[in-house]
Amino acid sequence: MRQGYEDIIRRAGRPDWFDKNGVPRYGRFIPDRVANVYAREAALVRICCRNCGTSFDVAFSRPSPSPVPSLSLAELIKTRQLSYGDPPNIKCCPKGLFAGSATKKVLEYWHKSDVRTGWIERKLR
Image 1 (tube, rainbow, N blue to C red):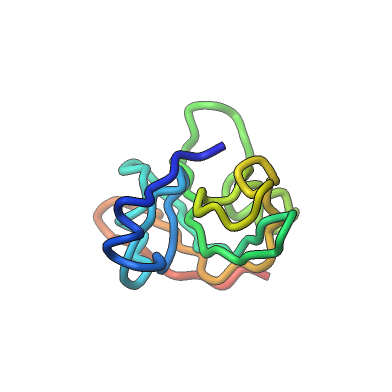
Image 2 (cartoon, rainbow, N blue to C red):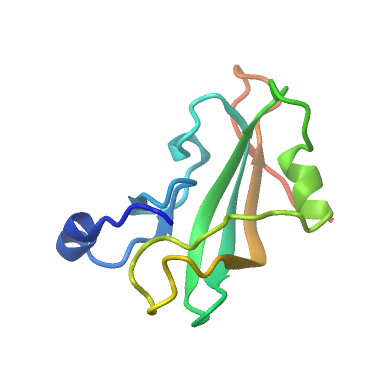
């Protein structure tokens, strides 16, 4: 279950996207705004609540090289292994807090090969 941010959402309205922790974000997705300041990969992904089907745009990120041996974000996308877990906590349905989510579509994928060059948007096939 993720923390709810009713105080923020009540004042600012429905978020444009959520970070990996379910924190509401407003404005266009920018990779530098993901929760992980060391990220070298970032993606904006549409997910939905497994119970009621409410859609959310959420951010994924990975440092590269990863301190823990694991797949890169690009590999997770290509092999359809992305998992956000429970959806952001907006109380979309009675089971929404614990319903889990399903990945629907990768909207954007960004990669930073070198900290000096900045982010590059890439299309994954």
